[in-house]
Image (cartoon, helix red, strand yellow):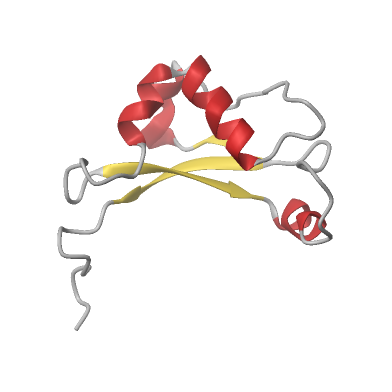
Amino acid sequence: MSVAPGLRGAFDGRRELTLGVPAAAGIGDVVEALLRLYPRTRALLAGDGGEPGGLYLHVALDAASARELETGEAGLPTGCRLYVFALSRPPRGGRAAGEG
C-alpha cells in the first residue's frame, strides 16, 4: 500500500505499508486494519463532523486489481496494490467551489 506524503504523519511516517489480511478480505477489512494499526487515521474518516475543506482518507485500487474484483470473486486479489491519499472535504451544503 502506498501512502501519499500528506498522510504519512497518520501512518507513523511510512511511505509504504504491508498488511497481512486473510485471502477473503475486502476493502472494508483493509480499512478496519488501517484504523486498528494506525488510530490517527480515524480523524481522516469522511463524515458529517469533519471540517469543511479539511482532508479525508481515500483508498484506491490499481487498475488490474479493480478489473479482477469485477469478476465477482470474494476478497481482494493476491498482491493487489492499494493507494491511500487525501481529498478535501466539500463545503457544508454539498457544493464544491466553482459548481453552479
